[in-house]
Length: 260
Ligand SMILES: Nc1ncnc2c1ncn2[C@@H]1O[C@H](COP(=O)(O)OP(=O)(O)OP(=O)(O)O)[C@@H](O)[C@H]1O
Picture 1 (cartoon, helix red, strand yellow):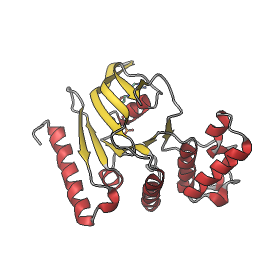
Picture 2 (cartoon, helix red, strand yellow):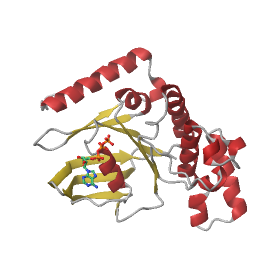
Picture 3 (cartoon, helix red, strand yellow):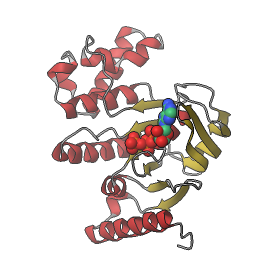
Picture 4 (cartoon, protein in one colour):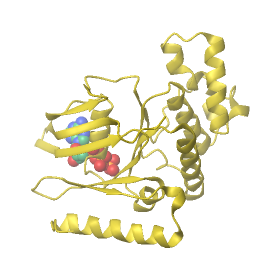
C-alpha cells in the first residue's frame, strides 16, 4: 500500500566534488531532497547540472563528498535490492533472451526457475512483451528494449525505481507511448519513481512532484520542489499552466531571484 507519509529517500546537505585533471569540479552543492512512498518525482535540469550524479549516489553507485543519503532510514553504502536503475541505453545482455534478462536479478537472488519464470511473465505482460519472452534484444525495437529494461527493474520488486533519461534515445512517438505506459505501470504497481529528464514537458506529464536542479556559475546549485496534482487529473489547460509555472521557476532560479 502506498503511504505518502513514509519517506523512502532522504538527501541531506549533499555535496559532490570530482577531482579532474583540470582541478576540482563541484557537481552538486548542498542538495536536499525527500521522496515519499508512491511518489513519481521528476528531477529536471539542463545538461551538466548534476542529475545523473545525484541519481548514482542515491543508487549507491557513487558516494557524496559530504552530506548523507538514506534509504528507508539507512545510510546508503552501496547498491541495494531496494533500488533498481533504468538507464537510457537499456543495458540488456545481448546473449540472454528477454525473459533471461528480465529474470537476471531474481536469478542472482537465487529464486528457483519456475518461480522466476512466473514473475518474469507477469512483468512482461505488464509491459506488453509477453510474446517476446524468448526473443533476443537485437530482435526488438528501441521502445521494446526499454520496456524490457523496465520489466527487469520491476521484477525484483524494488521500493524505488531510479530512471536516468530512460526514453531519451527514443523517437518522439515511441517516447510518448512509453510515457503513457510508464504512468499506467506506476498507477498499477504504486512504485516510487525518481525519473531524471531535461524535458520540461516530460516532467510535467509524468510527475506528481518536480525537483528543479539548476547550476548557477560560481554559486551553489539551486533545487526547488513543485508539488503537482496527479497526472490523470490534469486538463490540457492545467498542463499548460503548470508548464508555464515551471518555466518561470527555472528562469527565476537561473537569474538567482529566490522570491518566487
Ligand atoms: N566521474 C566524473 N569525473 C569528473 N567530473 C564528473 C564526473 N561525473 C560527472 N562529472 C561532472 O559533474 C557535473 C554534473 O554531471 P552529471 O552527469 O551529473 O550532469 P547531468 O545533469 O546528468 O547531465 P546530462 O543531462 O548531460 O546527463 C558535470 O560538470 C560533469 O562534468
